[in-house]
Each structure stands twice: as structure tokens, then as C-alpha cells.
Length: 494
Image (tube, rainbow, N blue to C red; front, top):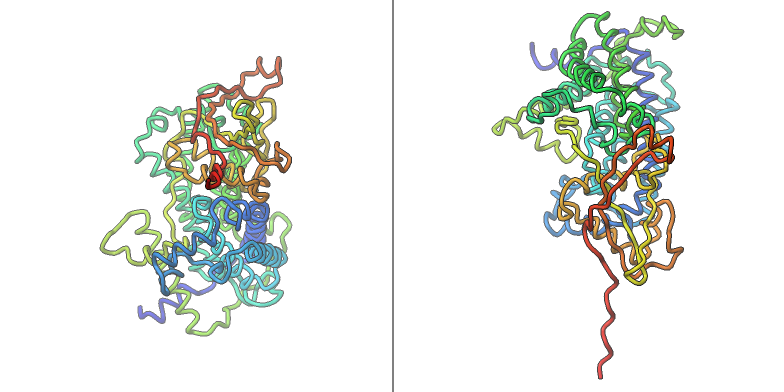
């Protein structure tokens, strides 16, 4: 088949997929909205002018190290124009507006493309605060959805412009890879907890940000936790292959993976990650299934009237992306140029969730002092600290500062030097960094010293919680980064 015929075949309509596409795009708009909403409250403290890792300084370093046009590939962000606080605010407000347009089904193709570009602009400048697989998942889904979405101002179901086969497949291919590659890395990692079926025994208390429901599930017997390991492997390595099977198997697969994701959402806070995986699964369904639950059966779809050059471009771009996703997970050094080309844009990723399970829960706490004797803790918004405070449920909100501190606690502080920068910002009394905490214990008068302390946390048992009301117990392990103080002003010359 010549290239033109292949392009026509790949971009032919995926029949019977109008309602799943409509539902998916509305949900994707809500996920983008949650991502920009969470950044609205954090981005100035993370990468603002008085933030922990200022974007302006980072981009200046990139310019000096790379220079020329290549810097735009290394850091693909609109913030090259301006990386100050006002520019950050504009990007976030624009992202919220475009997300709302996508939810409302107004110019969906343009809206999802702009959401992707604006979110990429944030991710490319967030540095240590964007090292999450979920960011790549959302960027990949947004990128492909720019081809999936119907054209027009108010397209409704988009009968005039049905989804193409290749864009529909590529989104399901992302969904498949998230599960299957995660199953593969669990086996390949050699982690004994997955092999002896104990991976879930401490999972609910050791994850980044547990929920109060996770406290209850943590106390279930070992046989239950071992069974969830078996279910996880069954879903990730076996059930997801139903994507390639006839309709009734795909429907059964949708039911199974939806139940799994609902359970994960209830017992842990992973930001928008599980919501995105959940709504990608909607694309397993078809118009006939949704007609049974009250959705009107759409009229027959027509072949979209798209220019031939656009069909060829869509097939070529998504074909390269497909190839890059394969070599990203199974590296082929001599054939990996497309993957390297797309790598900074994070639209063709390798996935692998929970390859190794953490065996203990550690927490890094910031403390300030005026005299070096009495220390006061800075209260966190989301991560465990007060042992009597019930763990919350706030996903899809993504608290990147709290989340990163969990990662930092798992290794030496030198691997997370941004923690020391955060201490310095607290000494300066940076308002944007202080807003990352629940409140300022020093009421606008910064302390003379700031230190970080490492704690180990465990869920309490039922008897202890009944007696004391405590959800956690904790033990201080000692300093994490050490103490940072204000520089001593030089003595006046004699």
C-alpha cells in the first residue's frame, strides 16, 4: 500500500466512537483544569521570582549552557518570553480558561492544543517539581487529543468530524502502556515484595500522601493484601490485552479497570494520575454501550472533509509518536532518534509505576528558631505531620511541594538540594514560599535559623486511635539537611 493509501486508512473514521470521545474530552478538560488550578496556588512558590527554584534563573542557565535555537528544544516553554511572576500568572490563567473551553466543548481542538502547550510551558520550567510520570501522561493525552477532537466552534458530538482510527488507537495505546509497562517493571525490578506478594502489606501507610480510608484498609489481613497483588498483576499483565479483543471483552475490561482505579483513588492521593487513567478507559466503550445508559444514538458518521495533506500529516506525526513509544520502553540505541527528538516534549513516554515498594514512611519537617533553642515547626497543608490529624482526600489536586518532600525523604539530602533553597527562602520570609505551608508560625517576622528534621511515621492501630484519637505515631530520626542561618553582616572597618 502506498503512503497516501496508508494515510487514508489510518485517518479513516473510528465508527461508533462519538459518545466515548465526547465524554473523554470533557473529562480531559476537567483534568487539565485541576492541573492548572493546583499550579495557581503553588507555581510562584515553586518557580516564581522569590520561589524555591526561580524559572528566570533556570532559563538563564539553559541559555548560557545551550544557547541558540537549541535552547527552545531543551526547555520548550513560552516562559522564554518572560519568566517573572506576572508571566507565570498569565500562563496559568490562560490554561484555566482553555480548560474551561474544553469542558464546555467550545473550539475543542484548539482548546486541547492550547491546554497542552500551556501545561508543557509549566512542566518544562518546573525542574525538580515536574519529575512525575503523571505530567507525561497528561501531555501525551493532550497531544494526541488535538488530533482526536472535532473541528469547529460548537461541534456537539462532532458527527461531521468523527475521530480517526489512529488518534483513537493512540490514546488507547497510551492507556495500555500505562498498565502493561507498569506490570513489566514490577517483575523486572527484582523487588522481592512483588514476588512474595507482600507489596501491599505496608502500601497504604508508606505511599506519598495516604487517605483516611487507606488507614482502614491498611489493617486488613495479609490474605487481602496478597490478593490485591494478584489482582494488580492480573489487570496489568493480562486483562488490558482485552483492548485488542472483541467488544464484550473490552466492556468487561472497562468494568475491571474502573473498579481498580476507584479503589486506588479512595485509598491514596496521586493527583490527577488515576483520574486520567480512568477516563482513558472510557475509550474502550462505544456508542451502543452508552445508548443503553441514556445517551441518544448518534446519527451515522460521515467521512470528515479534511485536506489530504492534513491526513498525511496526522498519520506521519502519530506514526512517529507510536514508534517513539516503543523504543522508549525497549531502547534500540541505533533506532531511537525519534524518541530522543520527542523526549523534551514528553508526548511519547515509557511508563512504570511502583516498580519498587517503599518499606518505611519518612517525613521531612521544616522548623524555625529565633535563638537556636526553641524550635517551631512550619505546618504543612497536605502531608502527614500532626499525628491526630486525619489524612485527607484531595486528589486530583497535585501538591507538588508536599509530594516532592516525600521523594526527598527516601534518600540523602544531596539528591534534593532544593530543600536547602527552601530553607533559605523561609529565612528571607518569602511570601510565595510561605503560602506552600498552611500558615506562617512566625507571623511575618522570619526566624534566625531554619533546620529540617527527619521523622518516621506509622499508622496507629485501632486501639490506639480509639484511646488517643491519633491516626499516626512518629519517631524523630535526627537532622536531614542541617541548620541554615542568616549570613552575619560584615564588621565595620576600623
